[in-house]
View: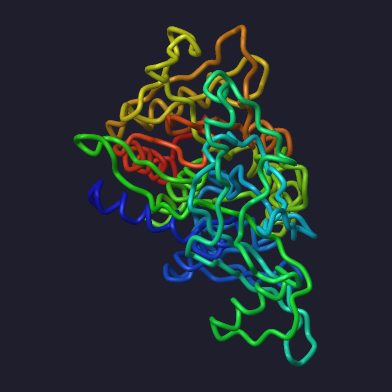
Length: 428
């Protein structure tokens, strides 16, 4: 597949995945087309060697795996990413009116850069739980797709100090402008029910929802030579897509597993987050004999795929001089002495060997010694499973902004490396 074709697929995936629920639905669509079979934790599993399966948790986390074929080594090459991104989530009772304008109250999810959310064309998407005409509770995905809201900035004439530093108060500055003259009885739940009916879904009453605002601007290639990919939610739908396409492209008898967790941006402490029991529970179902499971985990390797910080040309001093990854120069191995990343010398050497086999350049990121370091699902998963782990990511600008920037060459390059990881028989 050419780099351009790969980018087209990636941009389509991002467009159709405005929330973790939609991301999982997009992944399921591709897995199903490739012959993967759905599983349910509450049902009996009749697994066969070489079989391909997937299972979800809360509709926002997904695990897909191929079992080792008959005679292959009993181990799993695993890749982990996350489906969630920092955003603005709608509160349970959000309706507000001020000076004749209708607004919705929002809560900041994750460590979002807030200023870029102003003056954007915003849409609304997520999951709705409704009562259908027969009285049953059912859930549906919803996506307005069109611009339905915005957060207007205050004019500089009314805030002359705006360009000298302006903090954002999430409670008072971020209520989203939804409309004007919508009526004193405007109700969001009724609006959601009406939107679902437009799609032919019979809804009697909306009981509850999990909704996020998102920017409707489509992903795009930018730069005089289209060197960059600009899109929302690159952190971390980019890694989800690379892991998925690598698994589907891999030709191997070995075991493979992809997990895309929700709630990484808020600490992963949930039933569907990396700190939850979901991954271990699935592995225990695959390998019900404890001794065999421990043998498999000891022989397995996990790559935590999550974006890395590219060295910013306007702020080079924010990086260690020897560890400033550049866009379009390949994926980044992330290292931290205090275990904010799970990379060690063994896993780093392994990935460097794999990269050399497919002619993929490798970079390294270490945070400045006088700055704090972010983290990923890597250390959490390593601790949960006791599996050797490496943190790897595509270098990115404006991480956690409403629109992020990556090199347009890096996704396809990193896909090649991840596919080689799934296909390799390298052991330690």
